[in-house]
Length: 235
Image (cartoon, rainbow, N blue to C red; front, side):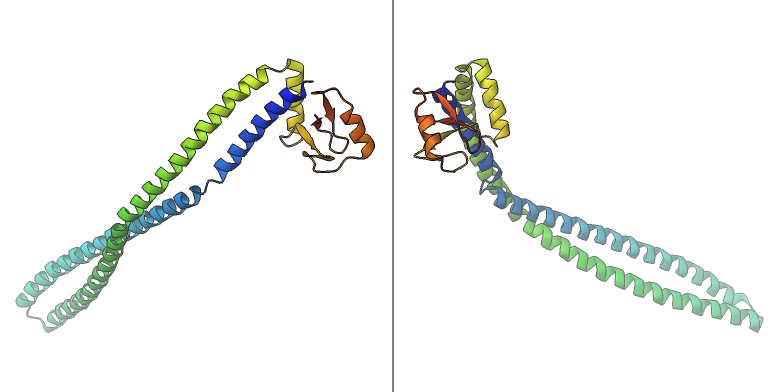
């Protein structure tokens, strides 16, 4: 195997792995997520408040309609009261009118309570609606910063991938397949360098006899780390 060609490919793949790691941890992600959460919260608060407004308005309308119906019925009873002569019948009509008046008072209370809820909900909707434009502007700014950072990574990734195609094409098919298998087996690092007496893949020191055997390999030839099993470039 051509150790230098394998290392060139490994360096590119390691750089691509680092780019993927950086993409998932861009510092611009947190501000964008926070700004998006703020916008969603304000939108939800505004929608919930407007729903309360709608329910309160419906309650007010229902109370007003019921009051109109009571007024119509009361007017009819008063008309009947003017025409009756029998005391018992008059007493019954007056009692029914009193019940209607009590019900009207209850409807007035219901309407006032609904109007209070409506006013409170309209205020909450106004507060959320007033804060929403600023939150949306902050989200747009955070999104723009994230887009810019992502675009830089995209450009670098495209450059690295183009270089990888060239580096992979320089390897024999069998060597490339063995490299890919080793990358999958060893968490992305198929071939490491020997740094003095230490494998940069597993970061363990090699025994003197293993070092001597590896250093006896022809220049550019690939060895194997006796500690982790990765391909190892000595020279």
